[in-house]
Length: 263
Picture (spheres, rainbow, N blue to C red):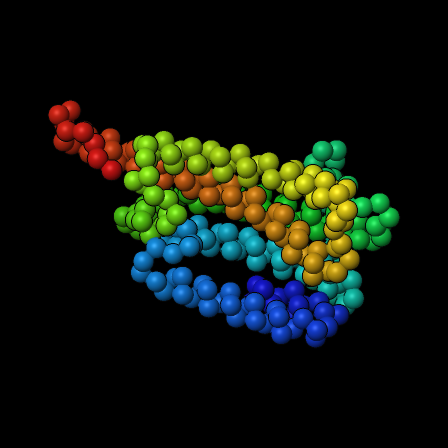
């Protein structure tokens, strides 16, 4: 549904890319089913520690839906599409101040770009960035309310962190804390770095073209979602590190000073 939604909502999507979009949607569905049906570690992190992936998917789904409704209103205006258009316009103008991520997204476009495309980009960037910020705030609130990650029982590092090797060397807690800080910093910086990189690539002779609404929807959604997802991953890794450290202290207190805490 997520992959097919922009094609389905936009009135002038055409049928040229329908087969490719359906194929990608089927692949995404099969990938999700296989990943969550497997009992062994997979590529998806925190698949057994809700609501981490639920919050991330909900944020991406909301972003794509909001942007699709904005561009649907260009050709087939309705009361709902007008609401999203007005909200995006207000939010875009509010966040579009010097050195803001939205301003950087606007100025990354090459000279001579249609002003209507610039306006749509500003509205889409403002609304999607606001959704990503709210998703991060909601994720932090959920962590506090439900004492994540050990809300429903034991936390299996092997299942939930398949790409993390506890035996790779060094203290596990310090490595998780370091990775968490790196992800948090990267999540904050990416909304500012991506437009600069795109502008640099365009200066080298490969300008970006966002005239197609579907291209603009997925580009802006990725720009807003990936930093928020990385930031949430950093917060999650930090929480796991705190959980392991607390468990070590409890084991140490229970066994006494003559026993070293184990992971």
